[in-house]
Length: 182
Image 1 (cartoon, rainbow, N blue to C red):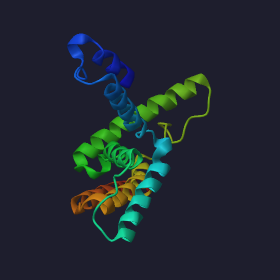
Image 2 (cartoon, rainbow, N blue to C red; image 1 turned 30 degrees about the horizontal axis):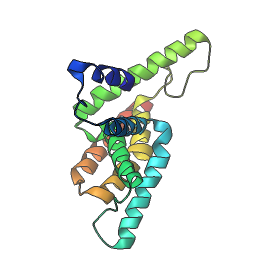
Image 3 (spheres, rainbow, N blue to C red; image 1 turned 90 degrees about the horizontal axis):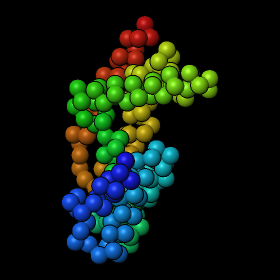
């Protein structure tokens, strides 16, 4: 997707970077690539670890100021911000969260269908017949989203509303999972 965006942006009538020097164009391109890569779930644990390290450093310094002295510091914050946004569906109102969860599960199921057709093992959570969507959502909140959002809020802001919505949505899916087990 990003390669297509860069191709479009390289056309004269679509070049949003036309006022930038070649050096600045390359810098913006690198930042954009790094930010898109931050949405790769294989990077989740390292992003979370970086974020928690920043939280601890902020506590040790006893200040509410972040150290953004280096490119690496700035990129870690930007990457975590994009990562939080990418995983934010469980912190949205339930109707939006359910809609996006359904879309994502359908994508997973299509992947599982394709894997079955090719005769390979079906990836976890991708089998229509065995996936327990409600339990998966509770686990996603408990082990992925909540720790990330807690660290982000510790570092950046007071966002009680995020946690209230996360807890309400977790309860909804937890209750739904319990109903299906009965």
